Image 1 (cartoon, rainbow, N blue to C red):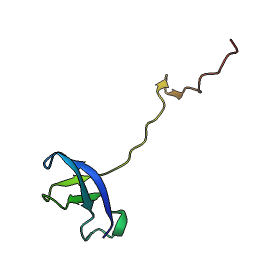
Image 2: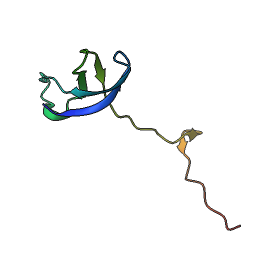
Image 3: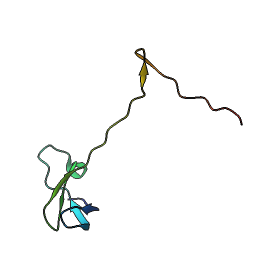
Length: 67
């Protein structure tokens, strides 16, 4: 089991969290973590932002201009 310290709302402080045995096969990279102090569970996940689209086309990044 991997362990990391995160803020726990239930314990109202920084506590060690660990990944429980994962039935989905994630191993140490399981997105589910459990507080070792109170047992509260959290889900840690990542997501991507996409650039805004104008007329269905992707906007190019803004160009920098000299001052």
